[in-house]
Image 1 (cartoon, rainbow, N blue to C red):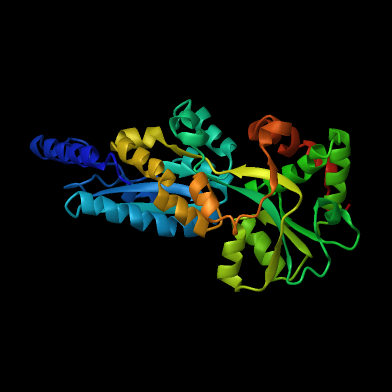
Image 2 (spheres, helix red, strand yellow):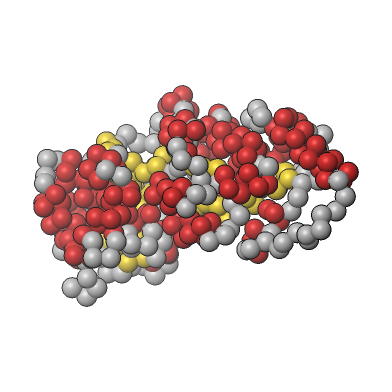
Length: 358
């Protein structure tokens, strides 16, 4: 890890030295636009530096483990210089809007490409960001699976079981959360994968959402609805959420059910160039994202039920990651941005299929 940090630390020291020799500027430094980004805007001194990673909620535990590793190796390579990595977590789309509105992120690590594309359109992220890292800037993936109550009392095995009249489904609102969008698209695509038409997929999804007693706001809200409020027979969520459920609620509360086919969920990462360029942190931000592909980071990903890109590490954990036929968003929907316009914008397909109380 940390292949580029030596040159980066030298650059920081040089900048600090020039600032000291040049005297004080006539303009006082402006306060941060957002309180949570305040230390991220503090100038580096003697090699010490702070960067901010704005991420989605489910990745909280992964970065709690990855960040200290990166910080420790930075210090070891640079004479004890301190690197502080600040984290901000929430719903992916909400986080993207926070960055667009001034949260000073050096990097973003999201759960859907459309959130990164929003920042690209606003000029915060460079065009072609996906080509700057391996695998279209997606260091690990997940997929959508079902969590059922221990022992699977409703004998739920595949997507078709979710439209049975005796089954209640808990899922995130696809208009407000990426977890919900992937669940919706996974259900739609499951029909197409069997040779069905879009009309048949729409009919199936409409029936599924008639079995939804309440739409959750986000992934953690959906889990709380299912396990704390004890509502529903099945929760549609990311495979990676299983570990979080066991950590928070204890093992043995739920069983995982892998449908015959599901959607591949990708977690893109990117440098927020507008912020990084102003801070001089571009090289460090790049190394931080590069090292998500390192063996150490890929092992941490596997530990948190994220499917590693490393084929060797994925094979090492084959007992954990059950084989499942997956399709990409692009196969039936073009892109997440196109799916947003067709399915999730106001008046889109989801609004036609789902109405509260009907």
